[in-house]
Image (cartoon, rainbow, N blue to C red; front, side):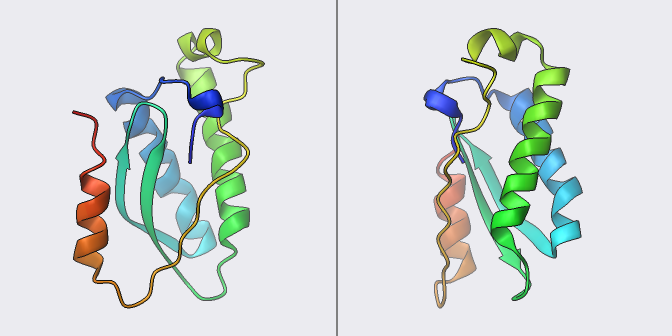
Length: 114
């Protein structure tokens, strides 16, 4: 998931809070977070979901809640955003089958901000 207009506003504090929000919302949708990492303008997540989980509804709920909470808890962000949009409307969701989880986790860990 990317920040609107790829604004570089995610630091370690914001990333930690985004992950906390993710951990809070995900069980309600039968989704668990296996791996999480951020860059300055986007996050990578490796999810496990129950077959009947509605992942797109979860992502929309997460983006809505996290946007509202992050802007409230970190008011400086509002100055960096245009029209107060936090997340881009789009997201990339790729399903994997047969790929070892360790390979996927390693890829996401390598996305870490240096």
